[in-house]
Image 1 (spheres, rainbow, N blue to C red):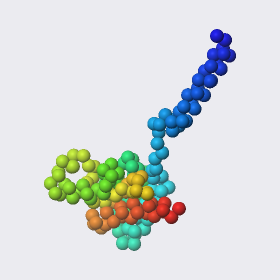
Image 2: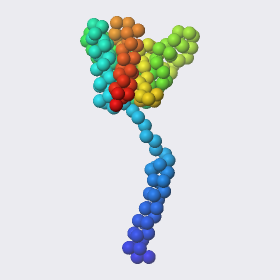
Image 3: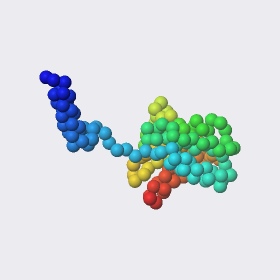
Image 4: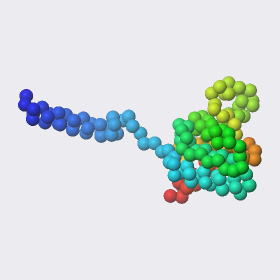
Length: 169
């Protein structure tokens, strides 16, 4: 077979294969569209939480992770202790990976389910999943505020801020 015939046959086979792949969702049905929080979104919602902390004359750290627990953004407000940033990240990861507020895990441990201490990074109040239209796109973590309850309140502000900005569009 001549080189031209071979190249033409290969091109036809690739075209047919590409058409079949498009007919099956573009990648043979193996790829999905997934929403996640962007860096800009993380900064915007962290700014809302920072404003809330400042209104209450407190410091703290605010962390935002994606739905897989990967850090997107962290901010440490003065005055707070240096480890608060790391703790906020762990609380956010816990909320993202367990897809529930980290306080739920803290309560379960307090009720005797101590085995969770082995699997949860920071089963402490202050981690909240971030949902948009019911889908978890990330999580927030707060640490170093005036109390555990305030850590949780700051994380809730972050989680609610993204939902509020996306529902207004």
